[in-house]
Image (cartoon, rainbow, N blue to C red):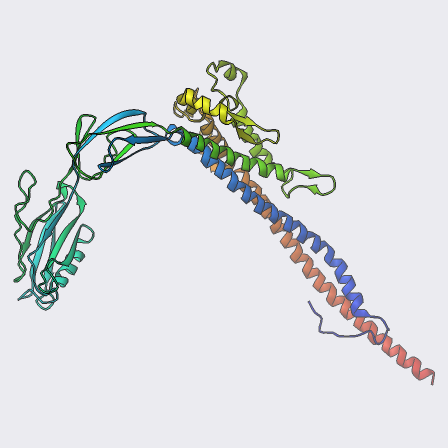
Length: 491
């Protein structure tokens, strides 16, 4: 804080301002040291958040490998194109199937008889209506005579029916001889979503509202498209749906009908996509290596340059490193010896450890293992026997541990990471902070304490500067008086 007192050392011959500044600068040295420590803690927080992101990315990849549906990938080849789009998810099973598309789902659509001008009022009195039913509900649009044009009617129907039925106005004639028609279109396909009981009391708006017959054939030219279900024969079984998606017929297989041709049979084969499976393992290895590289870079030490990063030796790094190692490489001797098929460890399936702690895929070994037995390969990573938390302490989160015989390394690792990074409370009221939350909270507390100490020291320095300024001002005044007296006596 600047003092209102100003002087220049005229009485004493000293540069008193420089002296005060030098004294204050000495007092500020501890503040500079605290600022340095604060910046160091903030750098650690930023690095911990970066590290948290890398660990989260690894957990996501591990979790994807932790279930067969997430780990396995299947591809589909089909004998006929254009009739259906067929795909398979990781929960599918290899096999060959047949498909005959008898009928695709269609949308119910009606057109009122045409008028010459879409902006001319069609009603003659207020209160005339257009009504219809859809999906068990009746919708009614009421018109005033002065606002009863085809465009007005369409707008009021859309307001009444909202997103169930769409009303549009189209010119079915020519520009020279227009025929503007009000068209009602159902928003969903299938016979259960037909528009029925169409009625109009608007004087100059007409329609033949006779619905389709029992076979689904239109009996009125105004019913320009009859809502019909999709019908297909899948592996000899006739299946009917209100839309063209048959996602629940074969487990893990999605079938979307495109066109009907009862004379053609589509043969399609679902088989494991080994390239995609290997790609998922590679993504996991890459995510793991990102975490390992971060830890390695932070923990480097050079005799001349010192630690490699601000998190050198940090407990969070040690905890994560220990967690990853335990989950991926913590098999007991009994488990290893019990593996008679050669799929019990990462190394055996082609994921090899490097001298720097990273992992590397041995393509030759992994390709051979996948080709030999994809099921056993997947079983190493995926939990195939379900989760069992029996015996865990009361209130323990579900992800804490799994006591089933087969866990799967991906599932193991995802759960192990959750155990150390997630904060949670138990039924006893205790709360446990994850490793990142705990470290960041400690560092933030340090920063808060440093800020408080800096603020206190700044106040002391301000008071000290003010006191020094007043003292030197008094000294200058006294020296000036003495010099004046000396000059008087020496005359």
